[in-house]
Length: 375
Image 1 (cartoon, rainbow, N blue to C red):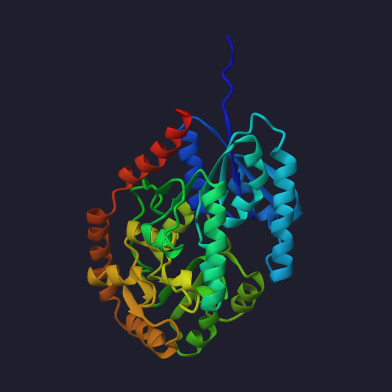
Image 2 (spheres, rainbow, N blue to C red):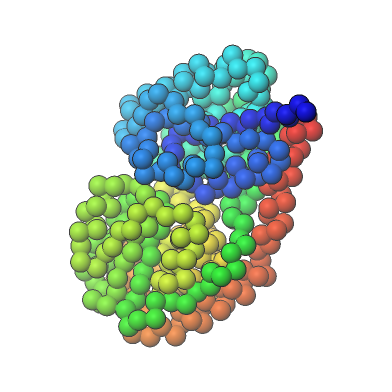
């Protein structure tokens, strides 16, 4: 009996940071009959993150991607391009690539010489990721759009707003797969901390612009019965500095099932995005959708567009990002009376059932990759 060879589908990214969105696309790829293979540079966190890739094949490129400063970042993108080209240009059986964002797409440029299929997942709009002047932003956006138009067979966006943010360029094909992960673990539902303390969660990508730059000041202005939990990865120097403070605990990077479980046991989840950065105002964060799944109350800064929709259904509390006193005041109110949290949890669960169809989203993702098989 001849064993059928499963075609490989290569996922080109800059880091082995355990991104649940990428794992989700890997599951779509697998369901469509391909074998997903993650391709990324060496990592400073290789030992810590290795366990997250135990179910996947990986190819590690022989350099470390350094994004600190424009020179290091540019050098790393060039090295990514060189290593991906050297590894795959002459591999005739390597025909399908999922390039993550602009960096991954640039790395695949020479592969177009042998007519491979390059699909770009625009997880983050590169041109909107930094606090540039409008002129620089429009220049970068034009470059980004040009590369996508001429290299990508298709661009996948989490929402139409991200495509519009790119200037709605005439890309060969545009596809939308919402940034909402499947959910079948029915045992996860919100209980709260069941103590006289208020447990506040910061999770996911832990960097200054995701609210951590505010945390020291918030700590100074909040009740001693308010504790803060950090779960995830990011700016380790900042994380370690905050973790030395009395009411802050860092518990590392968790699997998604562990995060969902944690959300059942905290009182409120924080989703803060510094609005000085354009893409932060259009954030579609997984931690918000996971909170909706669990029924965990949310505190979001008002500059995030998604907060408007959730606020209308009373599914979140809203404050301005830099308003330390208002943020602290809201937390101080909640530690004295958690009744609004219980009410919000019930509202969130109702909102989730009405507006989020996990099965439909799963089919959208699987059908996209199944279409590729037919080619």
